[in-house]
Image (spheres, helix red, strand yellow):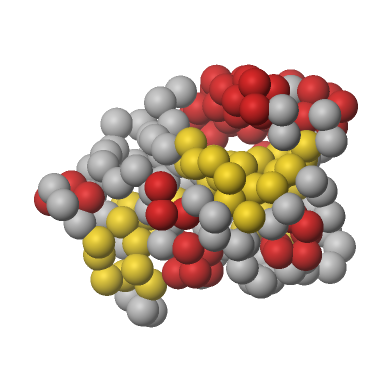
Length: 190
C-alpha cells in the first residue's frame, strides 16, 4: 500500500483513508449493505434511517461531498466544487426521477450550512448531514482533515436494493459527476 493511501486511525475509533489523493480504489465496498445509521435531513422531517431510506427506491446515487469552504488538496473540498456538484444533480433530477433513481447528497457539514445550500440553489433532492462521519466508520469511506475538522472525500456510491453496486472515486470533476452517474446507470440498465 502506498503512503498516500495508508489507513488512518481517526479519533473516535473510525477507520478512514488519509492522505493526499487517497489512492485506494474502494472496490471492497461492492456488495456491502448500506448500514442502519440515522442522519439529519436538512429539508426537515424525521431523522431518516439511511438503510430504510435507500430501500425505498430501487436505485440510489449517494454522493458524498466535503462541505468545506477550503481544503489543502487541490480544491477538491472547495465550496465552489460542492456548488457545482449540487447544481449538476439538481439539473439532472428529472432524469434521475424518470428512471426511478434518487440522488442523495451526504456531507459532514452542519444542517444550517446544508439548508443554506438548498435555499441558495433551489435544490430539491435530499441532503443529509453526517457530522460524526458514521458512514466513514461503518463503510471505511475516505476522509481528510483540514484545520482540525474531518470531511468526506468526494465520491459516489450507486446503491441497488440497499447494496453498493458501483463506486465512483475519485471524482475528477464535481460538475460532471451527475452526468457520469446517469450515463453509467443507463448503460447498465439498472
